[in-house]
Amino acid sequence: MTGSSYIVRSISKKVWKLNADSNVYLLLFEEPIVIDTGRRSNRDLLVRFLDKVCPLNKVKHVIFTHLHYDHIGNFDLFKNAEFYASAKEIEDLKKNPYKTVMDEYMAKKFDIELKPAKDFDNLYVIDTPGHTRGSICLWYPEERILFSGDTIFNNKKIGRVDLPTSDPKRMNLTIMKLVHYNFKILCPGHDY
Image (cartoon, rainbow, N blue to C red; front, side):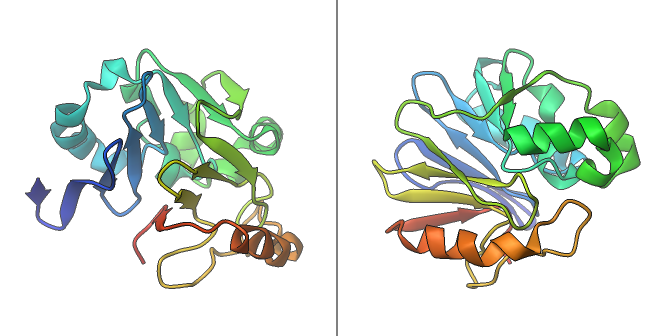
């Protein structure tokens, strides 16, 4: 399915990707999981394309790699989901929503119950501070897929570490940690 430069495509037999500047991933597990929900401005794309793969009201879990506005923008499309982020992201959000989300409108709108990120059946949370101090990646060993958020990208670049909740001193350790994951497919937060 395509629409201008936007694409929904299958990454593997259980993983779908919506490319709309900020990537959204749908994992068709027994209880469907979404990783990041994209920019608010791309809301219609999630409804138009992702909903055809799996009805949005069937998604049971939404996991955020971090809480920047371009990764949380469509959280409210998933009416029957529980929401997860790292404990550090949740802490930063409570301390200073605007610095954590980096968009005043979304910081005010993003008033939901967040639970600390946890492992799900064959999907594992990896703490990866750097881009934000609470960034996480997710590892799906069955298909050797690494969901990297804004920690690393396909072009071998790393995420920015000059943002309000970044932890630049920890990024090198994070990259060294990720070297040990022998991933076959990298699923970053953006395709640049």
